[in-house]
Length: 306
Image (cartoon, rainbow, N blue to C red):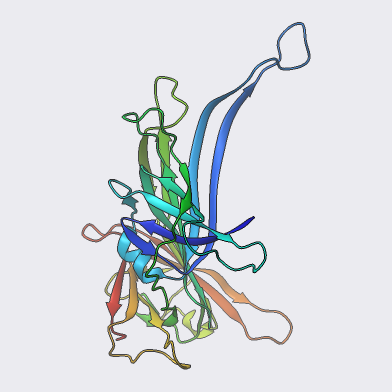
């Protein structure tokens, strides 16, 4: 029998358009050799960390669910469906023939939002699983057989890079956009428990990078080598939603697009980059900061292009 990835459920909502799924376990294994034998006589798991990683093009649903700082799993477990295929037809089986992995406790964090010229924006997320000491016999990730697949998958909207402005300067030919959310977490346990029970966010240091053919933006009066101040008022990146029935995009005034603003220091990573007779590309980087009022990066869904 063969299985394929299906949908993810977060906070009671279905996340579709999944392009990647990975569930992993990192074990701290003790395998010691003692006097009298070159071979280990005892192998133990002293600690274990578990997580699920996944990517989606259903970015509006995902962003509305987890925000820019992540979402505690709480009372709505993360569910990862594994679709079973029929051995003869190679198509999904009907009925309750599928598998479900469940993470009942932990946190889901956004890791990276990225988009290339003419490509669809993709959001990478990670669910860090924690052990629940109130249910000590249950592992951080459980599996179940004979499951029916969830219905009502929407996920038919796609977004791509549109207008970009950094430090008050329009970048008219953007080719790539990347937002590293910069969330660093640590999980901890006690009493020599195998699994961790608590989670700490040690830092949130977002970094935005933008590449394009914006050579004239490198000027002392535009964005100089010493950098420029990016603020939520003068730095905007738009992702526009595609039409689903023909080539094109939703009208500018339609509130279906996504807006990203950032505060921080904008500097050049690549002032001039090319080969042979190709057009020159360059790249900007924004190291983001908290301005005293707003979080470093603000993402707003359902907006018009302005």
